[in-house]
Length: 413
Image (cartoon, rainbow, N blue to C red; front, side, top):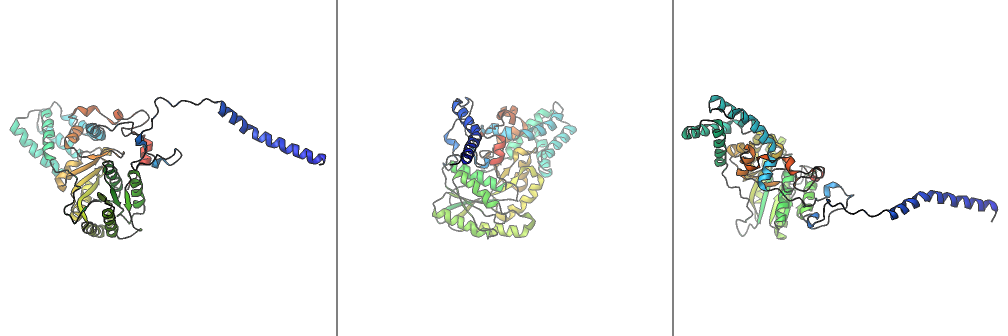
């Protein structure tokens, strides 16, 4: 080999060695670096780190939407959930009621009370009826000051919110063995999210759930429902875009019966701009879902609490077309006007059965009138509880999920 070739080989070897030197140094440093113990305040693993289908949690580099938080933080008691979720509404209403405290029950007091109820989104008709009954009570019991009047209002509200709020899962006949829950409402109120939370709740009770992607006109509806189903071990039956929603629901009912499932949760379209066609379609979906082996035992009208009285006018059309059995009121924690419950029950004649008090999967709860009134008027022991009381400094709320993680986890419809 010539001296020139040898020199070239030596130069190449030196170049390679110099290029690899930084990597060698980092490798040596990593070997020398001691392993840091896990922080004592860190989150320990638990069986809840898996999703509700029993699969292990995804790796850290996977999208946050697929992560399930630890259940180290225990859920809030029911009264604390209502107090936390209705904190904004309570502050708004109490600010209005503060102007009548320690006053005599005179005409000005009644006017201020009327303004407070209207400002809380109770609605004009319901407010007038409420005050008429309250005036009668005040006359019969010799109420003389505003504090007594506020307490009498709370008592009257409790008596007003009396209804059957049970959610049925029983089959009406031996031939119609598959209970079906239909979810109806305009787009954007949270139907898909509500179905997902209900599915997770039923799955946690050990029930087999089948979801029907009946909103075939919204491109993302089926994929959003699938994400919720994946988290709780449910099965989704869907059709092609633009398919007949009735056929999708029929297929879901048949599949659920064949798989010996416990319930079908059916999503529906909510295109209010095509109101006549939509109402005809929903009526057809209900008829098909109610045929053997299916039986529609619940038709839940999903209403966004933040839309107030506008939401009520939209809800009336759905109630007329689908024989609604109850209301799922979403985003109640995001509304500063918590009185919408009274307007719904008085003007629509429908019981509020479920309320959304947060963004976590466990924050869709059975409506409890006593807890609701205590939280709204601040008459219970939990009056001092605010959202800040139930969240840690890193933004981890009572469901154990940080605010950023919860926002990524949520799927809006």
